[in-house]
Image (tube, rainbow, N blue to C red):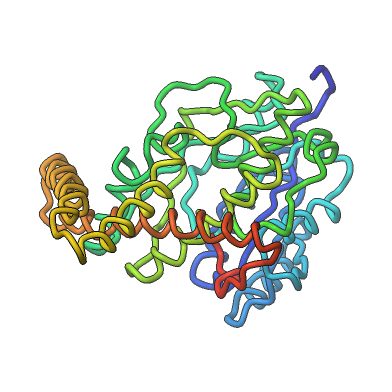
Length: 339
């Protein structure tokens, strides 16, 4: 990739009911000069709070801010709409999420990595943080192998080429040639796009020195809904491309199957309850270790959090795979929910 992509970027922010966060994020981004940030396109999924009013008020004071209507109310569709509306002269596309925290120099740093590495895409480290005891427990699990199985963009510390990560920046030409995000995906749209980018010969570069703060769900119910969607999305990706699954991605579906079979057989022979107890015991041991590492007893809530992450992901994956055999779609009640 030898094309000159310049320096100014178009920043795209998908939103849905982000009134608490969008104002501060926009002000943070706009502190960069127009030589770094040429446009900020907010793709809003018809929020029901004051998100659109806040964006409109800031747009009235800075011409770089543009509000894009996203009637589909899905992140992937909103980003595609914003990309289509972006100035074609902007060859650097930066993705930011309202429900996350960014370093002040995030845009110039990811743009510089994109240029120097001659990459089609730059991905960064996702660092989950929380405020309440439950949020901190979910964060501890998410930032460890217990919750995410060792994904590079979660616990990776070495920069280099990867096949998937948390999206931060794209070359305009790479995003365009790949066709953008597939808006039919309820989740894992980033992983699906990464597959197509790689198939077209684009380098996906993981910059471990750039980390963003992600705020987890504040309830176990919300966590279950989120991870169910993740499982459905990963299954969609597999069904579309028939690409190989990593070993860690096969564990949750296998776990759900084994737990279900064990529970049924245990009706006739209680010894089969051994497997669920062993699984819960292992999660408990790892949760205790996390609690000791963080020196905070509230991290013990990583036990129910991790069990929900594993089983919800597994159920989501299996439900989508199973539905494919009947050639029908799943009616998912959370498609409009943001990441």
